[in-house]
Picture 1 (cartoon, rainbow, N blue to C red):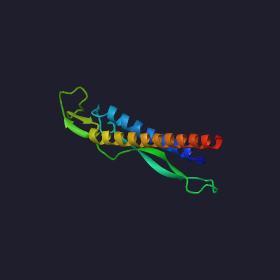
Picture 2: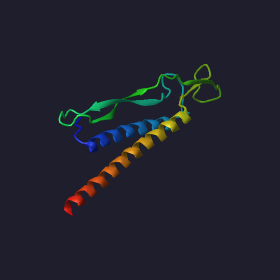
Picture 3: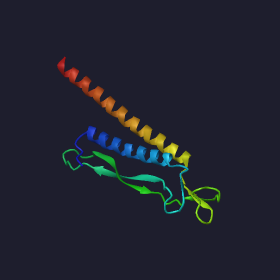
Picture 4: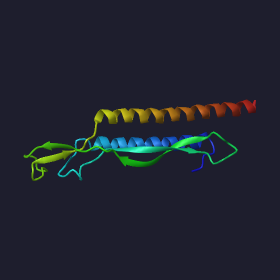
Length: 138
């Protein structure tokens, strides 16, 4: 991964936030999903981030983040006695995905804000670069 300038930093950071938003949307989409067995039940996911530093020794201090992997949270599905449900096991239990919708909404808002902050930084940088070019032309 090459990090040569602020635009590379922003690109990688935005990509990491998109991974975060995608896992949140998957978790929300599967909230309340029902399975016959505990092993088949949906488990919520979270990305694991890592810091990535510039390999360019002429430009020290540049770093960004990337989504290293996406892991399943260690949450057991909720077991509920519903013998009348068509997906109930032989003991009458169903397994419901243990997704906390409030927690997912907070994750979504945080990722969205981070993404917006990066966009604002890039926009400001482009404006400053354009002004610098115009100063050189005068």
